Length: 428
Ligand code: SF4
Ligand code: SF4
Image (cartoon, rainbow, N blue to C red):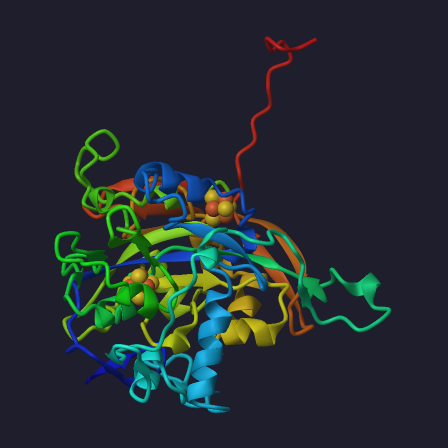
């Protein structure tokens, strides 16, 4: 094992390979609050990459209902239980000492790599704690859709069930693709070294020639996003639509600027924003405050990693749902939940402008600028903490630029409305 730095945990951790980082890192932010579970993203991915024989139960993108559902079923609660068994009562955060490279404090428990040190599988020592789901567990990508099984209600409290800050009967949708992790569990566990991380964009791929279908990646990926194909007897996973990322679609991007993936661009709810994060050779994020992902994830911490305690440093980030009981969210996204929801509940001028960039174009946004506009409204907002705040809304214009510095987005905060002339063709 080597020692590598994981900023999401705020500490060094054990990992089976030496530290090595790409120049750019594929990353994304999903705003859970806006998802309508239409599954357009799921079908966009399926119709592009997994429509063939042997891929019937393979959903590289899925949207599941929490807390009960999951694809494969109970993937997260199973692994959380395994970690708890390895390190009883000690899977905890110490959020006291925070800093730039440890914004959530420090995770004191064991990651999947550290917990594997004491664990054996039937064929030798494990490199990462994990399990192989059964065939049945893979059969439904969104089992128990919209079942509000999350419940913190006492008898006789039905009338309060849909009031903020926390609903007492609740569920939410969790949108999931491969996180193209900084320290991937799949890559760590592969005995054939068939999995690699591309130095140009951090995309994690399985070499289809080298893979022999041992399914160690399926076992070790904590998010269960490496999948086995029985017809070819090798494993497959999300490839981050890398031809689009490389700007190879001459029709959509004649100047070769990177495009977002199919699942991102198809999103009806406008919940998805994908980007490429500039990395320094030591793995730290380069200081690029006018990159929208940098702003949401590192500057403001409005978007949080999914189960950071697993230790793979996932590159998918989520704006947590406002109405869900906090202990559940803290277990899922770490100690940054309250701060993220507080900011999202009453976004300031810059945050409101950046939130307009979600699904504004198919191209990847590398830089944004805000042109200031007049004040158009004042709204009284009750924050989750119960405090009142006046939100001032300005009709600013937000601009987006692609990799070669070309402006391709210009949106105002106020959505323009147009009045049809009286004598319109459909007028009565
Ligand atoms: S999410 Fe899973 S499959 Fe994707 S890179 Fe991370 S460990 Fe590998
Ligand atoms: S397309 Fe967007 S809104 Fe629809 S399910 Fe997917 S993530 Fe949610």
